[in-house]
Amino acid sequence: MILSNTKIDAIGIKERVARLQSRSIKATSKQQALNLALSMIDLTTLEGRDSPNKVRQLCYKATHLHENFPDLPNVAAICVYAPLVKTARHALQGSNVKVASVATAFPSGMSDIDSKLDEVKRAAEDGANEIDMVISRGRFLSGDYNYVADEIQKIKEVCGSAHLKVILETGELVTLDNVRIASELAIQSGADFIKTSTGKVQPAATPEVTLVMMQAIRDHYIKSGKLVGLKPAGGISKSKQAIQYLVMLRETLGQSWLNPKLFRFGASSLANDILMQIVKQNTGIYQSTDYFSLD
Amino acid sequence: MNKRLNVRKTHKMFINGKFVRSESERTYNWNSKQIKTSINICQASRKDFRDAIISAKNAFPSWKSKTAYNRAQIIYRCAEIIEGRSPQLIEELALQGISQSKAVTEVKQTIDTLVYFAGWADKYNQIFSTVNPVSSPYFSFSVLEPTGIIVIIPSEKSGLLGILGGIIPTIIGGNTCVTLMPQDYPLCAASLAESLHSSDVPPGVVNIITGFQSELLEHFATHMEVNGLIYFGENIDTITAIEQNASQNLKRVSICHDKDWMYNDSLHPYSILRTQETKTTWHPIGY
Image (tube, rainbow over all chains, first blue to last red; front, side, top):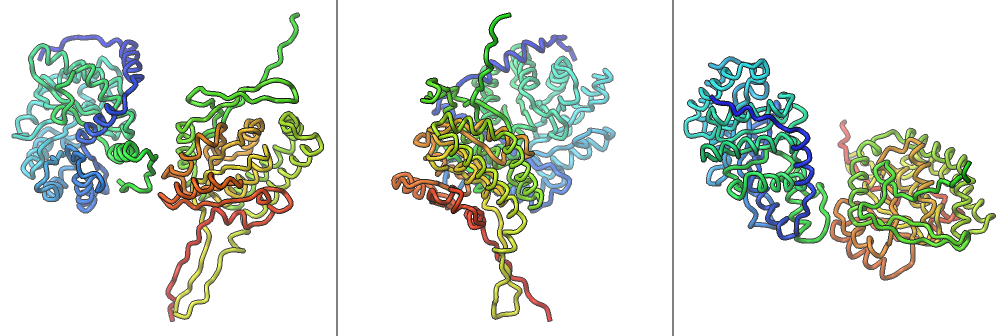
């Protein structure tokens, strides 16, 4: 493990984000961006009261986004708790929508390594294509980077063919420097994706931490040629925000990352907002949430 | 010491409890013959309207679920505030070409209208709800519920009474609204908003925008988030456009005439009914 010791210029990041967010987007690009963003969504339900039927309902939505627009892409994946993976797998049979499972004592990560490994194994066996793990933030903040890295490596080993997304929970990492260190730790320990947040801690995904993570991915790519994915999650509920993230992605990582294989949004209500925008673009009429499914 | 400069008022719109300029930064020139000067009035864009609708939508659930008694208190408080601000409103009406005596009358009538409808807040449901006679073993009753998000296009002929004559019956019944000031009488917008603001009317319940009806009308009538639209006026083309566009999500459209806001004819609870829906419940009777 060789950390780059890159220091983050917090003010520079802020200004870069502000500049990228003020880009104006042409109508045709907007249409493309909306479709792309839709195909990048990990439609998520992570509540204690989630039931098999709630998951089935979400899976139906994932594959039938809007009846009037049959050409719309599907969302990328459904993201659920491990015990609901089987249900989701079954409900999504025959579609290209993937199943992602959060694991490793999500959202706190407060558990011993053996039970985390068990949980991941079971989720993978049940048919999860993607595993979203959380890092041990307590250990990380106390400087025990080796522990965190070992943990990620062990979990990566039991994932098998499933992709591993590593949640840094940037809302608890305090500084952007820490976000950079955690990103490098995760990438070098074998993460296929790095993900900002669980969605259970405020602030969740912010453009600033996302940009820092993008830079870590970029630097790793320049050094090793390996493409690591990114998933901002939590707090992205409007199409406008999603498009701003895509602008940032295009400008920092380039065209190759404009692809659901390398970029995802972890969100639940974003899909509806994008659908409302797409209908608005097509009809010229502002839409109401009253006429879109509850989720 | 230098001669003091007067601090002049910026005429802003009122969206989500905040005083804002148009996001488009546009204004139109409004000329007063009385003081031979021109005043810049915000020219709302469709984005301003959309912002106002979002705020009305967000304000609706909690305003609807306030007790009628509480809504009455808030509107009564508004009457108190306007009473205290009478001189300012009279002055503004006079600037807009209304004679002093007529301006005094209009402000008084406005205050009385507020008090009148405040009184109805916890009473109209008793008057208009019914227990329905049905010939089967059911207890069937109908009660009123607010329609939701209402757009009000007030009369072009009044700068004060006409505005509140549209707003008050709407919000007293639990709806939230967006109102466009008449293009030629925009001056009271800010004072009205200040009065509402200091009467504990929650942000978003009343939104007041200024600008051109011709520019905004289509968006008023098509926006799917709008549940009802009240138009005070006689223009046939406008009425047709409203009715056609409103059909997309079956907005409840009320076409009203001048007498519907003028003092002598408007003080009746039927104006609350414009923005109420009837919910009928059938409940089995046990033996």
